[in-house]
Image (cartoon, rainbow, N blue to C red; front, side):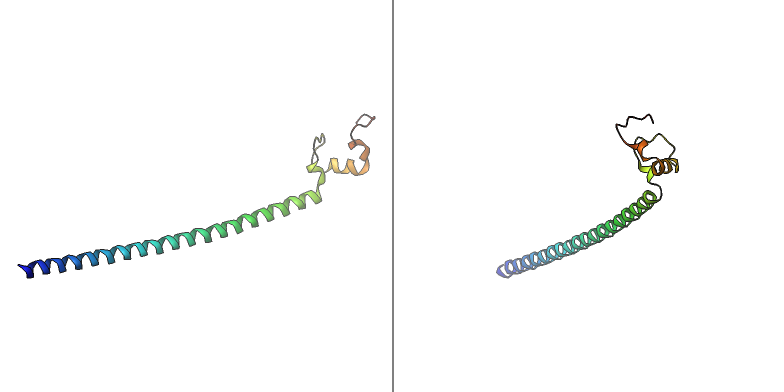
Length: 105
């Protein structure tokens, strides 16, 4: 009887140790997966940020180029067409663009 109880206790201890080891291994594997996912998300965010920065720089350069070539396209309250006529008038007759001028425009 004592031997059976001792064997049962020993078997129960082995089962508990196996369960604990399995739980620890699963938790460690889950932590590894979480770390990998976090690293992938961070790398993806950095790459996306690089792409966004590149797009912003390219768009800003294009807008700046247009602004340098055709500044009249960026003037507010412009009544002329925006394909060069206003820029030419502005260069030839800047008084027409002054506010509070007494001359009719």
